[in-house]
Image 1 (tube, rainbow, N blue to C red):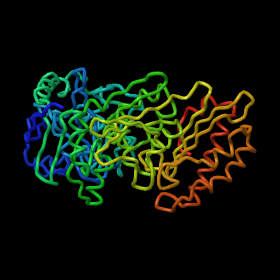
Image 2: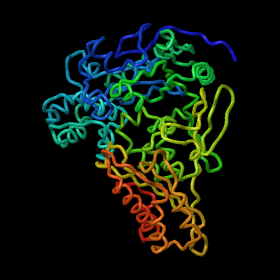
Image 3: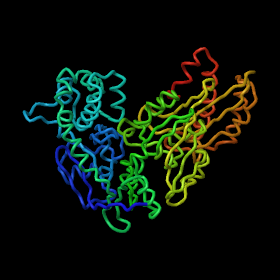
Length: 494
């Protein structure tokens, strides 16, 4: 393995200023740095857990083809160490030299989209990110972009009216980020020196690997380090649980982990692919997965969080593992130069324990596409539809024989056990049986053999047990009714 150049400073662009930092704590958040070190108070702290959107900023990053993509992110859970080679844009950068408000800001003023004003900068930045990519968005696109922004004053309708009217105040051709884009691209390319970043000593280290091979080498040498991709979970370990996560290895910038390929009816997704990057491919080939992803957090979380991270974290209420287990997905794990592939369902051993050796990491997930005659659906139960954590989630894949009996069925749940888990007893009860209501109702009695759910703040054990049974019944009804073809590919709150 070739030697790697090591740089002891973090380099990125903040608004229009080049930033060079050689004293950065591994767990320092972008929000704290903006407010405490740069006095940029437009970025607010509301929840410190990526829920309310008051801290929303844009982060621009170079794409492989050389273009520049800006995405809304939560500064409260985004670590400073993840920003090497990026362009951070705060609400202050929207100001024009002639002191006129930006079209997004002016629309918010004229349509009374702000009352107390605390959340307003976050809404402005989320709408700014949407407007740059889609100057005339649909209502659905506006609502999706604002899933991660909460306001207790306006009732949202004034904000939606403002969002619809932004382009009436000026076109994107005069937008600061468009006018300066070529310059920013050149500056970011100049920062991309191919070096590894190392700041600090001993446990108090921050490491940004130079490439995938370098990451494998670094993690093998420091197997107890915390690997951070999107930080949508790890951020809360710091802001809410005050956990020591040092040393930290930041991998969000590793392009080798961002590949998406479809071959022989298998979708292979690199572990660093974000939800936002994966949604188009998954929606095209497995329609039920698209709407599932749009209910994971808000847009800011989807722009940061990765599918590989959701798997590696091992949470029993992670949204993607049950669906991927039902699809018979597999994982490629890597340690140093050695790779191995295992079934995703075998990766989860017990609560907080996965089949991952010290120094090993999730490199990719491989997702088989269901056959045309198979049925697949996912149902998520939450207290509110958008931006809420799962109470229980059921995923179902069904193949019927020519005589209408169940030839194959895979059922997996989240929120029902210490890990994402298949319903083996229920599957066994259905296998070979006619796909009818009597067989389904008989199989529902087997749920008690598969799961003993807990009671917590999201649901009681009794509620989870009943909901799990009803999700199977719903799947049966949707696959046998006259509207099955429309319903089974959809994903809605149960």
